[in-house]
Amino acid sequence: MDIRIYNARILTMEPGSEVIRGELWVQGERISYVGLPKPSDIKWEREINAEGNLLLPGFKNAHTHSAMVFLRSYADDLPLHEWLNDQVFPMEAKLTEKDIYHLSRLAILEYLTSGMTANFDMYFHPEMIARASVEMGFRTVMVPPVMAWNSSPEEAEKDYIKLNSGNSLISGILGFHAEYTSTPEMLENIAAAARKHKSPVFAHNSEAASEVQGCIERTGTTPTAYMERMGLFEHGGGGFHCIYLSDEDIEIMKARGLWAVTNPASNLKLASGVAPLQRLHNEGIGLAIGTDGAASNNCLDMFREMFLATALQKLTTGDAAAMDARAVLEMATVGGARAMGLNDCDTLTAGKLADVVMIDMHRPNMQPENNIIKNLVYSGSKENVAMTMVNGRILYENKGFNIDVEPEEIYAKANEIIAGKK
Image (cartoon, rainbow, N blue to C red; front, top):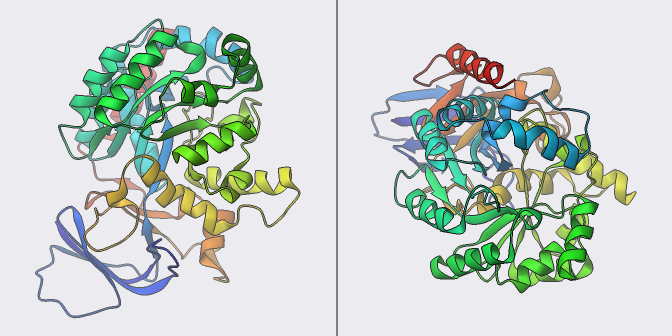
């Protein structure tokens, strides 16, 4: 569809960009123009008066386990490893392929309400996740959850090839669940596949102090250094969480151009700790933000993540200037896109894919307009999302979904699934 959005404020998130007043044109899947108003002889299928609302690149949720929405508010108030081993893993073992398809659809609805246009998903049966995303018009990048007891690097490589040869909304990056759920042989095979395909590698990394200590006892070094020793980062990649990093870990991340994906709400709720974002930022390490799964968060909300990302740095560093609003907004948009390999939809630029969010400026929490970027990060919320567009298609607008299924059907199916597992 050819769409013209006019009378808009626009924040392209290109380097040095500021909020401008203008319009944005979408032709098919891509942005064809962004800038000051100008005449056009294009026959628009739809023209939208933004009424002064703000357009910016869609948020990229850079660490998710979408189907884990079925465990929202199910196993709360427990330490990380008790939560994971005693509650999450046993329940996940009961999920079927069709369950994962239906549950992924529920997560996508929630992503859209928060202005997210893509997610970086790690879960079983990626073909079911891909089906859900494609049917709903959402963009998903997948990384395999390879663990010693339920999957293999060989399967992960086959999935990687399939994910990168089909629908443009779907792509894959190699990886595995974590060092503590892997064997050396598995990691060697993943490293070989990464070299073969020149793929980055992502995994959970240094989420808990006990995880790091356990790795040191098993391997003589930290998870990051061990992964480096195993040859996993020859083509880049990164880690999810990255809370307990040593000086050596940070040097490895700098040398390899690795990304650190922070998940502040999940890490707080599980009492895991606070990632050293300000130090990583100062060292030039790429940063992105993810929600993690709804089993540990429990809300898939980028606004809450942005606020926590900056506020926790101010608290833990004792510096109220730490991780300012612009830096955090970049993490949630440009950083997430680039960590996920989505360089074609990181900014609002002519020629790039039209993944766009519109923020309603006509709400009390967006006024007065002393600084729009600071309003977004420090006072913004999901109520401000007026529109979410993915690949040139408006999927969420004025609190309603433009998808080919009734949301209530998705909700009912999710409740049916969890009721059958208890």
